[in-house]
Length: 244
Length: 185
Image 1 (cartoon, helix red, strand yellow):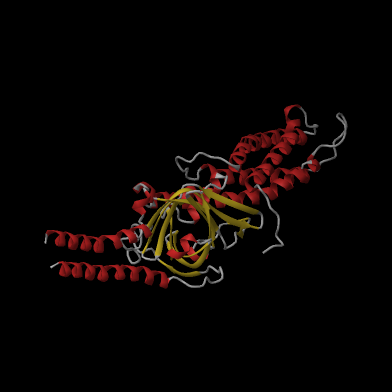
Image 2: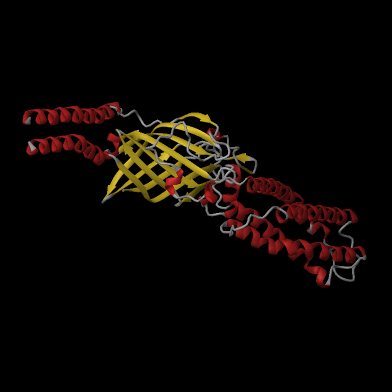
């Protein structure tokens, strides 16, 4: 009886221990013997297996041993898509792209207005007959100023009316960009008003005087703030166009 | 008689459970302790890095293979500028597909070696891409293991329309540097 029980025990041991040991060894044997050179490459692209839960684990590749997203403790709010927010972001980006393009376009008439400014300034002393500027110079400068103002406020409207994203405190260069709007924004309101006053005075044959004499300095400050605003949103600029 | 049957029972018990215990020791579970994931974006006028410390991960090694899962919300990447980050979320469809999920698969024998070569499946921006034999360096730090490496993501792999600045688009390559410290559970 003793020998029978011992035999049974030895037989059981001989059956199970080698089976498990072999399983372990075969798993090791499947492992790559030699490491290939580190050359990662994109293999293929596949659409998400579950469109309604795009980031859920793929059922094809999952097994009971593989960890799943639920193991990581993310909340459903974090893992669920929000198409409404995506649509809002798309609209925001579209409007800000227009804002960016128009802003750069506005720079051209703005610079031209600044350059033609001295040509529209009355020359000569008070009391003498003013021969310069010509009406053409004045009108050209005024027209450029009008175009700049129209483009500027159109540009601004695309930023002002772009959808706002909630719970998104601003930081970084965008803060300087927005802060500078509080300089060039009022500047773009005041400059044309002062310019109109100056225009009336010069058309009346007078040298620009009074508050209208600040038209030039205010315009220069406005253009500087506008330029700084563009640089701020582009910062840090890393010029290396020669590199591909 | 009684002694014999007891001996038989002990033998059978040992035969059944001892190998299981040995195998269980070989199975390991890992949890990400600290993580830093950074993408790098190149533009002729800009070099930008966006970093997230919000990645979570878990790994299971079983039967000769290891399967690791790492997930990070897209919106947690910070490039130092809110406007750029929102644009990144828009371009990568991050509101509709808020998570980046990386599944790594590699041989268990590599878990103790300096270099781990993993096959990766990356779900991002509503697309899935596979990368084979991506190298990661493993460094033992006390009881923890630090894994560092770079996943060579590209915009085209995930059908991301490359954002442009001054009409010049960013480079197609957006490599993601991974630096995660794991501890064994």
